Length: 312
Image 1 (cartoon, rainbow, N blue to C red):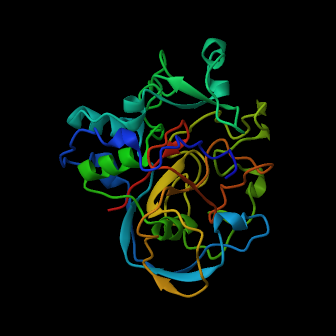
Image 2: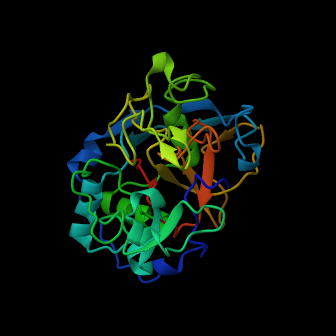
């Protein structure tokens, strides 16, 4: 998997989740409820055979998929919303239990970058001690001023724990793509086939030469507020770029062109599906901000570009 995607912690099912405190059901914050869109469901064409796609990712073949009616959040879960969950439950994330998480190297002071462990093939990621959702760049950092940005450094386990508290769940991959397409059939992006229609940026991705220079033409060096840019046809924000979003499905690339209803992925596996791309994606090496693009990671993995949105 191309390394614009978050690097894997590499422990499969996740040793850090075993000691997670029990999470009682609570009341979802009003922002989460107000941010839900009701979709009628129906049949759509999932996947792509786009020449700019990644066939090895299992993006194709294009196939008719039907989904039942569901509600999905307009926005990814924010730092403020996740903070309310933690304050109410005392939950400790996988990054906190492991003691570290991956941070994009350019966001770190020289002292932290020097000597930080880096994954093979992706030296722009640093394993930073003390990095977790409330300290996105490690010791000395905070989410102050980023309360309305998507929470990051959350594992699949952490996202599921939040859902249990909020009375929600993660979307299936089919639900995510149906919602992200916004009613458009087989378009490359959530808004059409042109990346910057009329020269207007429609998502938070990398501009410039990765990983050396980000020209920040879209206005954001890292994460953007969850309501940045124009929503898609269903009223969903940032289904392209900003942060990768966890889905409920185990990863598989074994798809057929046969019609299917309400697919939920294989019964088990070693990695979970992520959709949407992030602020680190760039056409030169990873154009996974396309609406059919997908990636995977182990359910205990965390980094500064992994987040989630919920369905009800």
